[in-house]
Amino acid sequence: LWASTGTKNAAYSDCKYVDELVAPFVVNTMPEKTLNALADHGNGAPSIEGTYEESHAVMDKLADLGINIKDVTDKLEADGVASFIKSWDTVIADVQSGIDRVNG
Image (cartoon, rainbow, N blue to C red; front, side, top):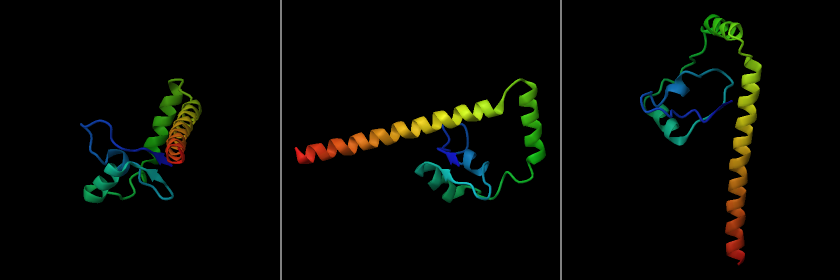
């Protein structure tokens, strides 16, 4: 699962994080603006195949620098889940507020 892969930096391609993360069995929750850009001019072809050796070298270098990738991904996952929960709670509160206004 890739979540919210829209490009935040205007200097980057608006398809940067989509075109670079294409693989089988992947779900991408990109913003609508990114989806439209991908449909218009994105590549969409598998892009991570053939990069395994390079990827393993990067992971090894991170470990050599003392970076524990499991700790990093655990934190990113926890932060992401917390963010989705916060958004969900906001939606529920907004819906409840609308119901309360209607029921007055």
